[in-house]
Structures are given as structure tokens and as C-alpha cells.
Image 1 (spheres, rainbow, N blue to C red):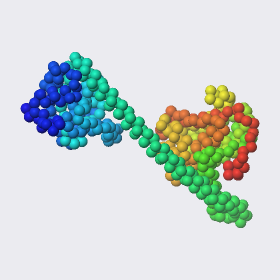
Image 2 (image 1 turned 60 degrees about the horizontal axis):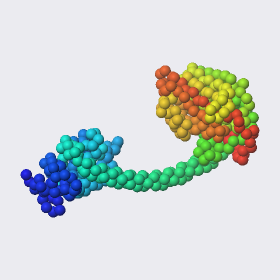
Image 3 (image 1 turned 90 degrees about the vertical axis):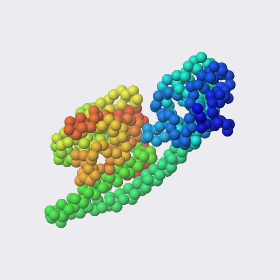
Image 4 (image 1 turned 90 degrees about the horizontal axis):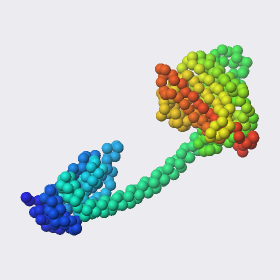
Length: 435
């Protein structure tokens, strides 16, 4: 038998050479055990890029490296490979799969011309079972390998954490720049739009316009469109405050019944046009709450409007209230807005409160945000959540799922703690929060 293998510059050309190689690695091994390992061994010369064993394959052999280098790799979910480490002459690979009688935990590939000695599982285990010396040697090698792997993993984790920290800081700076730009732009644009709205309303009240049906239709269109644009700018400013923790609360006595009466009046034309009903239950018996009436109005307006948007014509939206004892908030007011709409998919229940997020396919352009699945900037639920959290409350959504055929509906639960400080004055007296 002739082997194209080398050790210390001399070819391994006989069983004695193999025994000598194993003796250099396992000096305390009994002579009979050395001979048996050598008899079971097969010397292989492998070119670069040869895969010796693959991750997940059955462990059927142990490999000792005579010369060259092996790369140990791990398979990733995206079918790419992750380099673990290199190993060289005098090292064993593949013994872990033999010992645990399981699958390979990594892929082994030659990175340069390499000579290995391969020993089958049965022969290796036979010697291992009667040789404590071989078992001890392997245990020491495995311990050293685990220590090296741990140190490498810790170093990689530290490096990844540093890179992630830098990336997060950069994203935070970019997000703040974007938020500042949106806030300034919305503020600057809202001012001329407010002036335009005022002039349009004055024009619609002019007697000459009222006497001319054609001019009356045109001015009503201008007023309606300008009001909608004004609401969009207000929503953007509200969301920018939520994003920067700048949503100040100006507390005063609030009647939830009055809040929802106002919402019902403002959304009345949309409800009537769509054949929807808005029911109220238990709101009149709720205690007076110490909160910001403007912000609470906006929050519940957005929740009811959301129900209108995602409920088909002829459906129902219901707002109910009660006082409960919450394990998280203590005694609190709980208001539930539920609808008979298309529902929310389980994976969307938390995401719907993110800014600009919209569930399902909605219109990119719509004449009204109260149309079924109508368009909009996707800011309403973000404003509602920010308002509730600023009041120290909780808000979440519940739904059996999303289905436009069966319309399982959805529920938005708002809990506002009653043990709030009695009416605080906010440092922010800006009129931008007014609806």
C-alpha cells in the first residue's frame, strides 16, 4: 500500500508509520491499541475545497490531520456558511458526533492540500471503550476546543454589539433629523393652510357666493379639502410630539359621554352616508376624569374613525364604558370601541399602532378617510396610543382575525387610571393641540 501523505517531511508508507503518527499524538496509548487503530486507518490525500463531512450527516468516522489545514463551518438559515475556526496537524475532528452517536454539528472542508487519517466509527469506539488514556486525551482536546470556541464567540459577540450600538446611534440621529424636518414642515405648512381655510370659509359665507349655486359648490369643495389638509398637518404634529415624548397633558375635568357625543356629531355625516350605527353604552355613568379633553377627544375620534374605515356599509360601531379594578393600573375607566368590521390579523395586533402602518390593502388615494378601507396617512392609532400612554393608561387591540368575507370585527380597549393627580397645568400652552 502506498500513501501520498507526509509527516515531518517523510512519507507515510507503512502501518508502522501510522502507528508512529498516533504515538506522537497519544504517547500513553497501549501498543495493542495503537496497532488496532493503525490497522483500521486509511490515509487520504485531499485537494483544497474537499468536503470531508457535512453538518447534519451521520457521524461514521473520526479524522486525524497529518498535514495541511481544515476549515470548520456552520450552515446558516439563509443557506450561507459561517466560519467557525481552522484546525491543523495533530488535531482530531469528527469525534464529537461519534461520542454522542448523533449527527455532525459542523461541516469540515479542506482549505489547502491536506493529508488525513480516517478511522471508522466501530474500530474507533472499540479502542476507546477499553482505553481510558484515549478517552482522557479526547476529553482534554474537546475541552480546549470548547474554550477556544467560547473565546471566539465572545469576541464576535462583543464586536457585533459594538457595530449594533454604532448603527443604533446613527439610526437615532437620522430618525431625529427626520422627525424635526417633518415637525417643522408640518408647522410651516399648516399656517398658510389655516389662513386659506379662513378665507375660504369667509368666501362661502359671502352673499354673492350663496346666491350662485356653481360658486357655492366650488367654495364648499375648497373648504372641505382645506379642512382635510389641516387635519393631516395637525396629525403629523401630534405624532411628532408622540415620537419625541413632547405630548404634554393639560388636565381638566372630562366627561367621557360629552367626548363621545362630540365624536358622534362630527362623524355623523360619515355614519349616515355609510349606513353605519354608533352605539354608546355606560359612558354617561362614568365618573368625571382628570385629563386633557382635546387630546382625549382626538384619541377616541381616531378609534371610532378607525372602526368606520374598516367596517363595511351597514355595520355597527359600539363604544362602551365601565369602571374596573385593573391589576396594572388599579381602579380605572375602561372604554371599549368594537366594530363589526374586517378584523385584524394576529401578527398585526401590535404593529397597527406604529406610525404609517395600515392593515390590509387600503386605498392610496381617497376622497375621505371614512370610506370603507379609505386612504389616510396611517397616524390615527399612533396618536391614540400616545395620548393614552401620556395619561398613564393602557391601550391594546383584540380580534379573532382578518377576514373580509365573514367580518369577525375588532375591539380596542382603553384603560385610564382614576388615581391621577387632580388637574395639572401643562407647560405647553401651544394651540397646536386643539382639534
